[in-house]
Length: 182
Image (cartoon, rainbow, N blue to C red; front, side, top):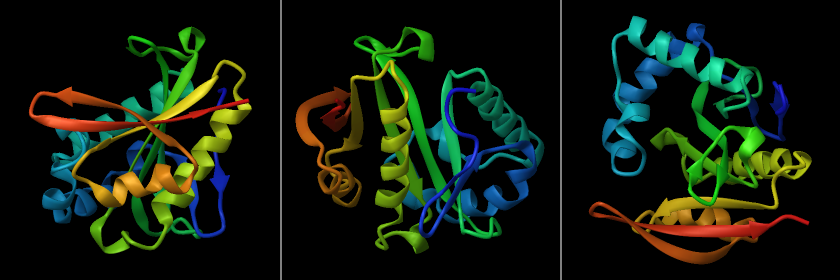
């Protein structure tokens, strides 16, 4: 694996998802549907029965091990409370690609509603920024946020990213924040 398996920050434990996380993740997804569905893809926020969620998490773990994408569970420092997800995706000009084909990275994140507003998304995204800096293929990092999601857009602003583009994805308007690595 290219990305570290476990990352500890001041207030968080970040580690790859695995099937055994399904029982802890399902109630988070169920209770946060309204909060998450406005901002992240349905294939990520949609609660499904435990066997299906376990398969989804197994696929995340396989993609992590294959250096296709790195999806981390955001947990309390002791690993007992599921807080959300932070991701690092390899990209090229045309979109997401395997790491071996990438020249840039994208950070994604979401938190359960009751944990928002505490700086945890910024802390987790900062950890992903450090991972991106450690990987030699990446020359820049981007964060894409719905233009209406002010709390999410505050994260890249706090981390020194510049708003560099606006994209239209169907009816959604996305702000693209970029930071050059060097």
